[in-house]
Length: 120
Image 1 (cartoon, helix red, strand yellow):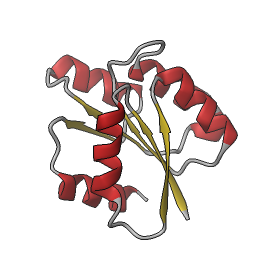
Image 2 (cartoon, helix red, strand yellow; image 1 turned 45 degrees about the horizontal axis):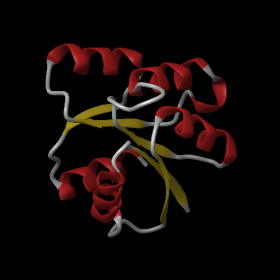
Image 3 (cartoon, helix red, strand yellow; image 1 turned 30 degrees about the vertical axis):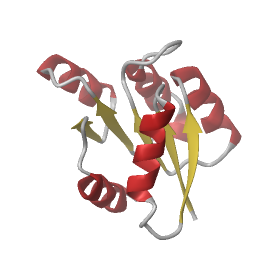
């Protein structure tokens, strides 16, 4: 089983993302509502891929990425940034911080599932 951590401050968006990925075999899901909670979840259970929003309370998504890339157990975990930020500066910052892929909302469910499958 592969464990995907979905990090977004919107519970509705987390449900939409998980719903889009339900068709994938052998995947379980964990959820976090902010960046600090995401880091706690990383420490508590094996995570094989993270889907991460940028604009969240308590800890910005870029800071989560930096934390992951600076700490050995989390360096190689693929991270898909899924955000409303469409500007080039946000995209460049996320990729420079270590994002594997940068996608914008609204997202196409099948495309997201294909990206997750490819990264796992």
